[in-house]
Length: 155
Image (cartoon, rainbow, N blue to C red; front, side, top):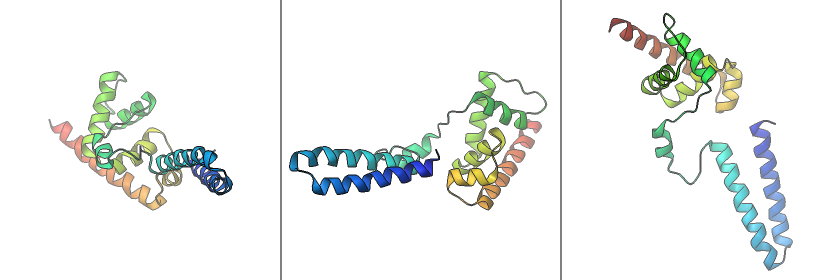
């Protein structure tokens, strides 16, 4: 089931619960209102991708990503094609490298395109942006990464 469909179904359930709330007796209204609040909270979380009660700026600054090791390996091969070896130290190196030189959006698009081999159209659906925006983000990320790779080779 897609996330979009799941959110739609949650919203439909919220509408039904609101109708039930209007018809319920006072004791049941307490229970139903709690259910509605919980469902609305879940919808906000699914739509935004983060805890609605947390400060958004803190969540963005943390830049914590949980990568599948195979994704880091694929990205590592593109960053360090001559001498890539998959191990935890190199995984951390790749993750830090991406976090330092790319914006959050660029990193998301690059990670999904290169690391997980998703199509740009699918990435656009996941990130709720146009396919051309994904293409621009990936191209910008690649330019920045290539510039960083040239600096690394000089050092």
